[in-house]
Image (cartoon, rainbow, N blue to C red):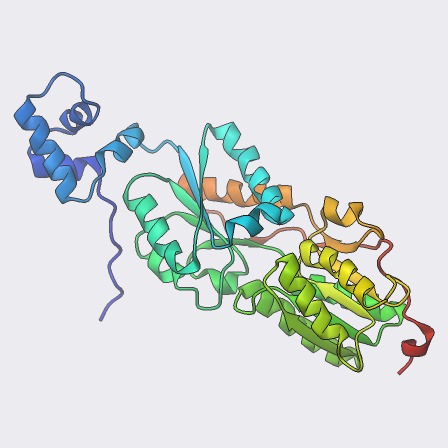
Length: 347
């Protein structure tokens, strides 16, 4: 069989044709203005209902192809989202672009298995003009489902995860390489890593790069899995430190988990960085306000959000925008990393 046909979003012309009136009559009826009879108005509203057209939402988009709203659905616990600096900075970058286009952000915090339904409801109901897709997984079901309805979207993630959508991403493998090589240069030979959820595409890329590079450099690398929260990050850090040959340095997949590790190190009677070096991903004010300050892989998250949004505006306006990487994160050494204890520096 040939490729499945894309579902087309119902338009005002479809409503007009079904009701046997002109598009202008549909506009008048939806805005509840004088100019059509009560019977005609009822026929138009019935046609809209039959076609799945939502009059109260569609009326706001009747001005044509002007961009009004961009959708962003994030499958994270709402409480965690409020604590995680990455998304606050990322959303501020999105808003910096939307403000120049008189456009709004429609944000939904939801469960991962509800995201397809959310985007379909937004797009087919005329509530958004495009979406930003985040936290992609390998073989993510959102890709075929949302491509199939013609949703204009940009994927925040590697092109291997994005299917037919334009993607903007950071080079996670290169950043992991810089972090590991830095710690090895300091003399560390046992390096731990606390990752985010293992099914996320960028977690897979980072884990693969971490395992391959530690093997290549002849050092021991061990990964413990968490969920980006301080609580789970602390637990994962404890599991690494309970090993008989515990690591002398640990890399964390976000800043919140790295901050939590400072307390865990204290529980074990370990001094940072004299006994244990800590390195965070996604530099933030949290990393700079702790004592000791946290070394981090830093990139401009605000600018990243803006870059993704510029790409989406091109897509929504029918302008070709090829997938491309954002600037790679770079290492910012601070007080939480140092040479390992002399007794463990050599193998």
